[in-house]
Image 1 (cartoon, rainbow, N blue to C red):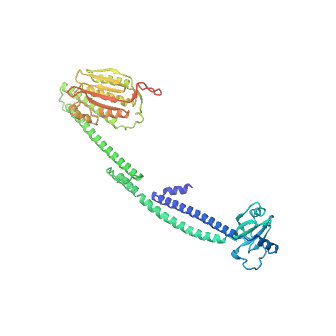
Image 2: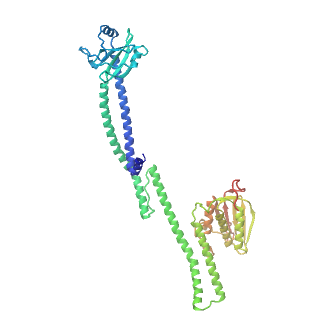
Image 3: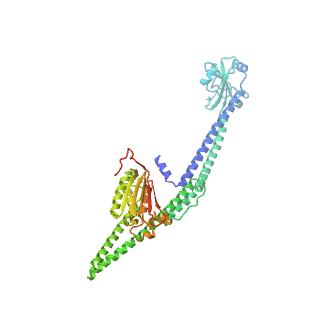
Length: 479
């Protein structure tokens, strides 16, 4: 069985559809033909039974023939009487013991238990098929004989029914054959017509695979499954094109951001190398400045590469990026300690920090909080204050820096975007983008809100994360 199934599945889809359609129609035609044959056979037998009932003989005439000795034993030669083979009908008498004699007809008919039951008076009438003495099939109607302990069987050969059924069988077979052939042709036409959209889709997929042209779109017609598949394909190619554009933009932006520190680093290293090659010593103060610049550029490159690695990770969490229940207040405390080391001249207050447990990636969440605090440290004036609060899952970081112009707010979370006023400051422009992605992955949201319209009013960063003030019973908080 597996062999034919394997060969069937190896056929092209169009051939399988045509074959299935042809088989389905052929089975339907065959079922109708068989049903029609049995219905016609039943009608013909019913008609023959009615004819036999209409040919009931007079009981007195039967008794007279029996008493006159005109009822011959089964198997004996029939007398040469006129109308003896009228309709090739046989009339025979059956007694209660199952003995029979033939009154009329060329053949005698086998007596069955049903006939004996009528002769004994246990049944009123029976109609059935029986064998004649010459081996042919007869239709027999047996009914009681009034005034005599017995019954009369009137029988006619079934060949008149069989001949009509034979002709009907031939006609139905021809119709079934024509129907099967027509079904095959219709199935092939249906397969070709129905698979045209699939052919277009296949051609589009092959074109994309061959040329990597993601601008290909398939015309969508209707609301059926093919239309849905076409829409899905169009959406997929659009998403791939957008992803490729973002990737190209990321590479271009990363190259642009890497070029500046690399150029500065190369210039400083070349100055140091030229000094060693020529033997002309650089003044100690200038040399210290060059080394400090080299260190700063190396630090900037390391930070930029780290940010790029963070952004290159897939959005879906995998091994090492598993979401778990963590104490946001503890992670915030760690991030504040790191921020104080980076801005020792600043005052970072955290007077209203309440417990809050969230489901997030611990390392990514800590990096996001450090980025937010670093951003506040970077833009705070010397000796300034940064206020941090955490109330009911809403983390607020307020600085007193220059603030953010309203027209720049839509761009603050874009990759590599930096405010014109901040381009002279260290940074890659990726910190807030990493914050937005990490918070979104944890199911939260982040906003930057200018505190006031005037210069120096500062900015408030607000991070809202879903969670609870107590950890769930089944999860131990990660600290």
